[in-house]
Image (cartoon, rainbow, N blue to C red):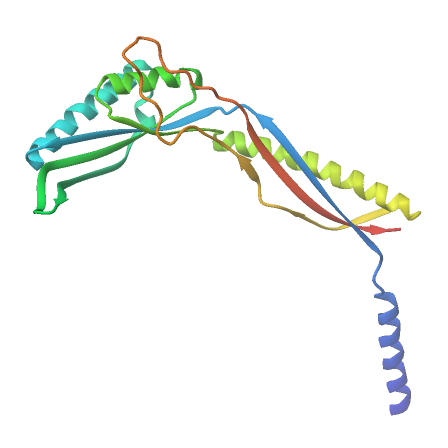
Length: 230
């Protein structure tokens, strides 16, 4: 009886092993890139003041910052789209052979400004500079998070269709057909963004705003699909 039970167990193991035989699979990759114009601009305005005392430097910074912010708001920027990115107040000293030379107290203040009105970015920069801003640190033309998700999902669909098309051609080349999908994986989204010059040229004394070219952004999606063959 013990011997018969052992044979039955062995038979079940062999049957399970046979039924679990791996099926042939085929793997294909798909990539899709979509070009789109940016729908948002983010730029950074610097305000730098140097005075004899910390109180004077801070007071002057407050005056200029208020003037710059009011000018931006009057030009069409929403109040909630203007925020302080950085503020620092410190004693400025220069080094010389005779030791340190006190130059005064310096206040460095950076504002982050966001707008969907890309065509008028030059106008906003001019307004800031004419009201006391001492520099434009950078201008980033990009997509809003909602638009990024929308376009990336569209690119994923196109990448998936390309992967399926490749898999069908590969299967046909070996006289097979595609079966069910075994696995699907996606690569990290890749965004090619536009960055203008790190130190933008400030507006001249004329009344014409500086031109800002929006160009295009590229969003790339990749997908990997494994199919069974039948």
